[in-house]
Image (tube, rainbow, N blue to C red):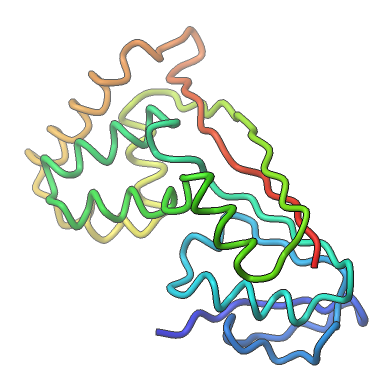
Length: 192
């Protein structure tokens, strides 16, 4: 499986290139900053992807990565994954857990340092997500993600059960403005 990414080279604005993340169509030391915004966790060969990014960065170039901490640091997505496992099966639950695949700080640090990056600093950030209700969380997130195909194929009874379970699990996160829960992220800064 190849992992294509869009690349914007800093040398010429508006110069967009698409290529395989493990074989970037760029010469060595092409740009100063590489940013992975909620993407690295989806690449099948993260180490090869990072080594390639390291190659394309100029000396002392900066790497910036944002990826979610473990799913246990986001009650809403944890509840959704658990309910999907019950009502749609383990494959659906695995899809919901996918964005959290680099949640372990030790693993994240190891793969980045293993690719040759130095001065790896991992910071933590918390964002609050707000939805009108548990049902709207399931609908909005689910229909705007790889879960859409699964949700549209669920029977009305199964979908109602999914929404009911997610809403019940998250009842303690109801506020006057709706459903509100945290999601935590790693913010990584490193140098070539």
